[in-house]
Image 1 (cartoon, rainbow, N blue to C red):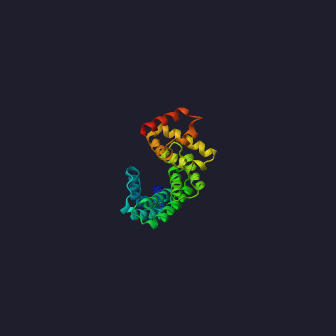
Image 2 (image 1 turned 90 degrees about the vertical axis):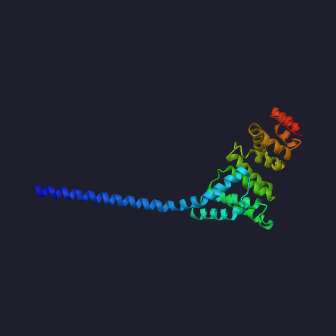
Image 3 (image 1 turned 30 degrees about the horizontal axis):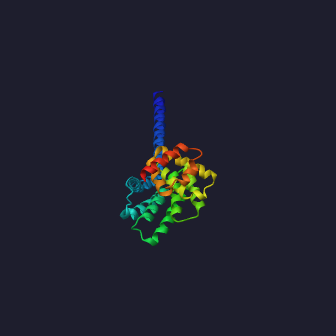
Length: 244
């Protein structure tokens, strides 16, 4: 009887050990699979680190890293090769845009760089449309290249739709809207009025600089605000008069 109990206990222990080994093996295989799947994303993130740092620094001090651009472009392309994510496409669009703006870029290479920036930005937007800054960059590139107004106004509208109150974009959107006011439909006119008023409430100094460049006599601004927001218009007139 004792022998039978011992044999049964041994069998149970053997089954338990085998079950544990099987579980450990399954967990190990799962861990390996996760690592294999995650490795390209890790590599993409690793290569994008210097790109992220350079772009953030540009938005702070507006200094284009001319000497670093070729290396940064290569890093960005490597990130896409590992993981074709919208963020890496957007970064690549920014880098091509900066290279086009860079005074050290040969003149004959600037238009191709703008077009590359346009292509990468459009790809990023196809992957993730809710990017107000990318939409505005797309509109800006087309404005610089003197494309047809409708190809500029479309992404300009999308920038507002996807980030209406983004304070960092207000002044640029107002400037672009004023520059193309004669091509705006009723919806776009209402959007420009809205951006003007938000900019006036939140970034008045930036707005005044834009008005000084694009609508010094406030002719367009009067058309937009005289009937609906006369007080705001009056305040803008007073401030602009002081700056003259």
